[in-house]
Length: 327
Figure 1 (spheres, rainbow, N blue to C red):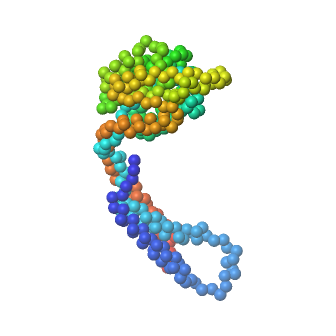
Figure 2 (cartoon, rainbow, N blue to C red; figure 1 turned 30 degrees about the vertical axis):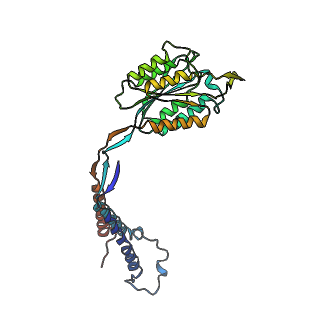
Figure 3 (cartoon, one colour; figure 1 turned 90 degrees about the horizontal axis):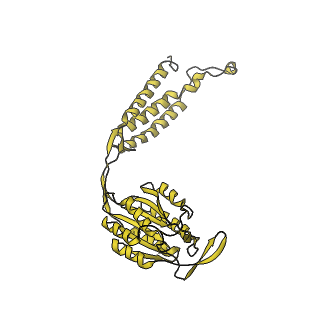
């Protein structure tokens, strides 16, 4: 809820408070004693009445009343906004390989950690998208369904590790099929799967190309990313031991998956290239969708008017009772 003012020009009236306060100070400084005495020694031991400390309170009440009256005249209004606007938003399932080979250190600090970090940046740069997260190794499961809660999604992404799936291997077909199942029934003009893997399909009951045909049936684009150095081998740390493993990326299959579904295939050989790939996908996949917003205004001047009236009443009561002047 936001508060606006229908007549903000009335706030210029507050400038009148400056001469009013100045006049009050000048007037009280010029006040002459009504009773002249030769000496005040007799009254030195007498304590001041509490009324002395209340002398200026009526004036304070009057100033507060004038301020509240100006706010009431300015017509404060609270509003809940609703309007029609076009934003860019699509449905995306990020499908990430978490097999043991994702520990390879050709991307820094590892392939998996680089993919998580750059993937999180991609997520936070897509505020209007529904994004889900599927992970796979020898089997596949959904880490997060489609959501617009980017903070929660990034938290779930950060919790991803290569030991979440006990079944070893790389089931690319299962990963795609699981992602398709998560997004196929969504009523949206654009549906996308971003598949990231560093290997070739060697597990699972579903062939990757069969899964690609399934995605194409539901008009789901699949962008495939092969992660790994162009060298024959990459360093990896397993059980505390650093060793070299072969880089085995089935680029032909990943390229075919992308072609079947209208997506693209990318190769990420380092952190910078992976980041640029996500940036390119970010630019490619932007679909205009219409979002309806409304604006309901409520008048909020009444509390200010009541406050102003209360201050005036307090001033009058105080002047007529405790601070009453006797001629």
